[in-house]
Length: 118
Length: 407
View 1 (cartoon, rainbow over the protein chains, first blue to last red):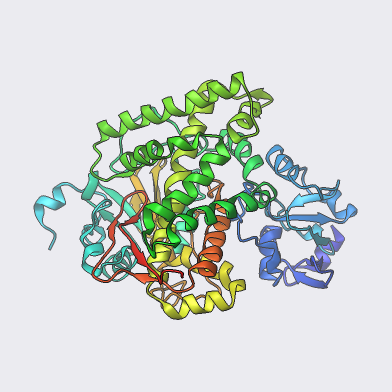
View 2: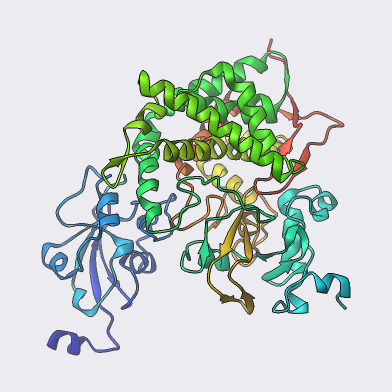
């Protein structure tokens, strides 16, 4: 909790992002937003596939890899998301659909890698 | 002042200023402008962003992209159980389109496993072969009626081969689809056509059950939901949806697109010289010529932009209006391949986003590539004007194109 208090209201959680091309950047993420929204707002537009369902866990195109430590802080993968992740050959034990991850203070410093195109 | 007779047809909770006449199947604005999407776009000036039309049994209409983007995914307030205007009570269910969460996704996944990007990419060679086969048929004569000979023949042929339906049934399939979508078809006739389609798809599921082949019908027979195989009724229902969804939407989008392209010689030259912009051309065509009006059944009372929508009422998200929304796409009437930050809802949005959208995009790209490569210069036959209709799916027919006969 101490870390969360330090961050305070003014400071939004900051995520470390690696894009598909391997570029790295930091993204400020609004609490309560989805990770997908935070990435798009932060300029990582490649997370938005042309064929996106709009963030409703129905297309599987917003696949990301999360660092192991942060992954353990996320609520578990639900059945629908699990099934969609199975479409990806590139799935790892730390795969998530970014539209299903809510940003919280605890995710400050999370490392997110955008997965290859399906 | 609202005509008192008209007012009587409208529920009391609808305010006078929310009432605008808009005919879902034959709105006079379309004929007035001679352009389906431009005709609808008049509503952006004439009507509130959410209004109530007393036509066709009465329904709400949403005209703005951002409001549609809230309604279409909102399965708490809006159901897909009934998708016909005027509302008709029918027990024909199209799986997964008519289903709401949570049961919806299990069935959607069945289709996604065959319409995912990898499966679609693998289809490119046979789709390209079909594009060329159909162009071969007409190129020497220097003219064609595009809407049937190419616009419909192309996606229907691709779909029939994908499903494993016998190609000699082509005319019969087109006839059934025409009958289903024609605005003059009465609700009773439509139920008969539904029955005919269900019987047709059932025949091929039966055949492949006995003798599986490498086609989608056979693969669907192997599919499972909640770890059990699909029932006969579920399979027929999915077949019914694919039959309608796969045979009319791409056809009409292509006809609208080529009607435009035939009249823009500069664009023809640009696509010929720079085929790499064809994907942007396809997206702009999807925006400028969206064709689907997407109804929802209100399942719980909800207020949307000051409109009190009551459970049991119908609301229509007219997807052409999303692409033509000048709040989102400045100068929406202009076909601009280089448009920045383009937005459209041609495939809807949310859990029911068109599962075939990647196939549709690929078909449009390939046909455009092959057409401009082989028929780089073409035009609409002088003195002809295509016919247009609207409804659940807008259509453009009798599109007569000409080009120089090859030597």
